[in-house]
Image (cartoon, rainbow, N blue to C red; front, side, top):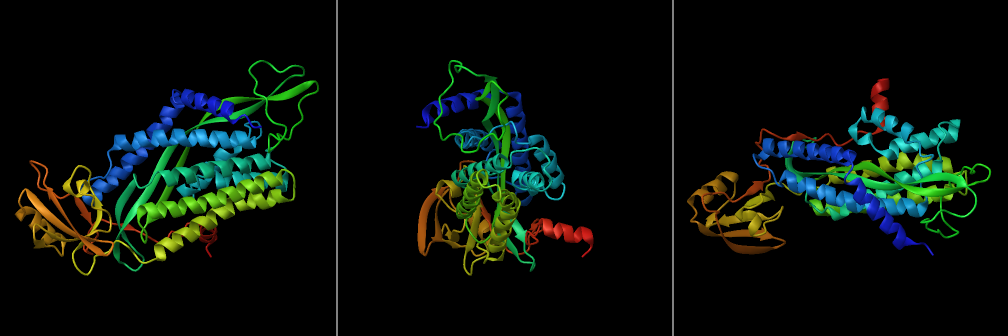
Length: 413
């Protein structure tokens, strides 16, 4: 029986120790910088931002710790070790690919290409199944983090589509510092195992190390703390942010579990190794292209309605957020005054008493809520969908940033 309780306890202890490492705080600072840049974008577009920077950093650290425990457990269960992962090859290649496009800073591409180079050329010396299992487990962890993050970092945007139409959207970006505890195989002289070693079942590890221990020695596994990071970037145009996240998480999980199965099978059937190595970057790229095409070609959700004004997002600690206004709600009247444009809404806010009734349309029914302005302020706290004359916006080009398109551009074809 797998000693999961003992393993989880060791992983949790290791994760806690990683939290006090300087490298973890450096990665967390980088995460905070990314969220700060997102806040600047919101301020430039709307003059306000949705979530405090401190809240986003704290949530990133908490979710990252949860993801670190999950990822560490899965890597331990499979038997992935640091010994022949080839991280010294994968990281430089990932950085080189990032010069083409930042989203290629992903082990799905670099890890798959390093594994494929080993299969075809016999170099570099890496354990192909373990490299691909690492890629798969990191993406399983990412899919879970995407799912549980809900919409806490959904940043409202105004985007211009290829046809010139300005529409409301959400930039979905998350960054997580990932404190991992990875196995490292150590050869010790044969004989009795040292005290404190956990006895593993005979079927473990699912992925063998692939190297014989020196004569008279045996392999034992130690747990080593490692700091990593995960990032997620997407856009919601045709779907609400939470639904878009769920779709992305589900599709990424399917890809990751399939890749993990291929990695484990390729340890037994060597002919599957080139298939799995190609599936790592190709499957990831196909997933992104299909998801983006489906979202960007769909009917925009956040566009001006026939009557009233549509809410794109709300601001914390304002009447709109307190009464539960959501993205997609359509404001019909404020204090009895009809609102069919941003100008009419501003007029109604200035003319309204301190306490007023807000009428809006949601999911096929009209809702009325009584609320009041914050003392000393006169603002509702809503960000409206674009009305078509906005000067600040983001240009969307359809998201075709594939390696094939880059090669065609470089070759001039």
